[in-house]
Length: 174
Image 1: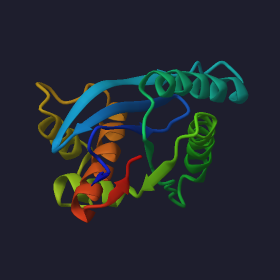
Image 2: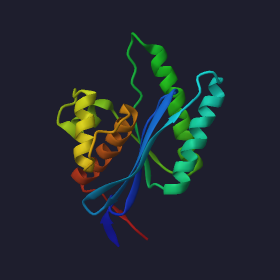
Image 3: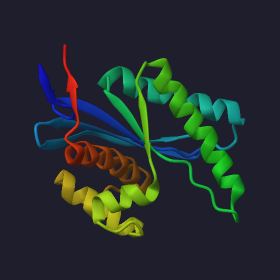
C-alpha cells in the first residue's frame, strides 16, 4: 500500500545542548499535526562531560522507547568563528543524540537553521521570537513554548514535516 510518509507517523525534533537539550514529539495524521510531548533534558553542570552526555543519552532513550518515532530530526551543526567552543560542545550533545537514535534503530535527519526558519516563517533570518510564534500557530497551542529549546526542537520537526508535504514523498508500508 502506498501512502504519504507523514501519515500516522511520530517524529521527534531535538535541539541539542550540553546544559539543556530540548525535544518535541509530534504525531502526524493526514494533514493534522499533534503535539504529543515536549520538554527539556537538563544536565548538571558539576558533573564530568561523559556523565552529562550519558544523561542526555538515557533520557532520549526513554522518549524513543515510549513513542517509537519513525525519525529523529535535529538541527545541523553550526559554528561561528568567534565561538568555536560552542560548536564543539554542541557536537558532543549531538553525538549523544545520534548514539541514542542509533541504539533505538531510528534514522536521523538534519536541517540547517536557515532552512528551519524559512520553512516556518518564510524568512531564513527570522528571530527566535518569530519562530516561537509560528510553532505556536502551527500546533494550535495557547501560548508559545516556554523554553526556547523546546520551540527550536518543535520547529525542526515541523520543518521536516513541511519538507515531506512539499515533496509529497511516499513510502511503501508493508
